[in-house]
Length: 478
Image 1: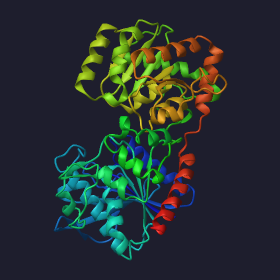
Image 2 (image 1 turned 60 degrees about the vertical axis):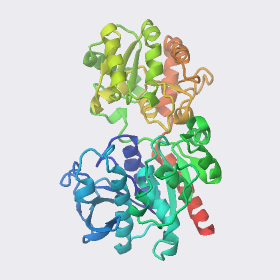
Image 3 (image 1 turned 30 degrees about the vertical axis):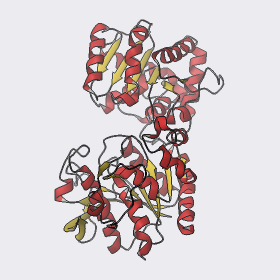
Image 4 (image 1 turned 180 degrees about the horizontal axis):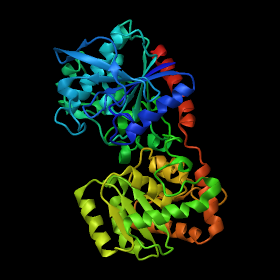
């Protein structure tokens, strides 16, 4: 199949969060299965053209922003192993900060319009357009409302992936005309009067919809997690499925990670101790034999920081250490700094994003905390398991789909799972983990099961193959 990914970030070119990791990895896995997969993203100012060997892909062309025809340039790079196209426009993409800009909806709509216009002049045409999150939702919307009447696009099926339903791209309905869609349109029942909800549009118009874990796909059909779109999702439930994200086994490989104090694998776990000591030195924590818990996270409510703070006093009264790396809401940053001052020998907080320190936390912590309120897929728990850090997670979304509770599955458990979103439930799971930690034999067995779990993109890519075939079947049957 010929498959075109549309997204607004992609590793290694531009990364803000986990979306970039997915767009940087899944296309490679699909290409290894024999598919012709390409990616299109905006060309932001911060993308290093020389480093990534960007070249012009054809001549300039006209793309529309509302009724204004703008001369637009498409660039291309093959440096990542996947043909990647970059839409350049001085007005919309000459920026370093992408999200939260006053015109972000207009810029993302223009990006999709430019890609569709480029396809008119290019010899290569995809069988599938795979749009990711609300930023690219114009693609399935346009293909459904206008593309079927255009011979060049009529056979093109669409897939829409929900990475995080909470972010929906709601804006005034003047954007409909700006997007080049039919002047007359019917608002969706879930759209407020006078608005367009791009997440809802992607769900409503795509041939198939998927979320980034099976559990999350079920959760978002309920009001608690549906963010106002649960009714729409239930209406399209025959088109909605879930596929757990993967991790790049080459990028996240403790046996070949040059940032670590000691490289290791499942056959040399004793070498992990050097990484724990290096982590403690880096964070000025004493090397006293206490189990070390790690967190690498955005400091936002979704990630369970409020539950962690509620549990912190009791948690740090135990014989443990805690290392937290991340940045986010100033309220949470301040509370963690205050706790670190109160428990300087037990809690270390680094309020930044730091890839090398993150890897050392994965490789040096004994346990990895993810007490998320909700978690569509989650990558941290998968990386932690690959690096031999046993995850302690809440039973939600991709966390529930990827971590098997060792208290219930003694021969195959990979971590510790708790249900209620409370400090008490978190502490109970930590205590179960601490009891297992006291038995070197039991702990080593859990670590081995965790490190041998398969979270490769190859597994997920085979599921996406089947999803694409379903999309084509639905499209052809319409």
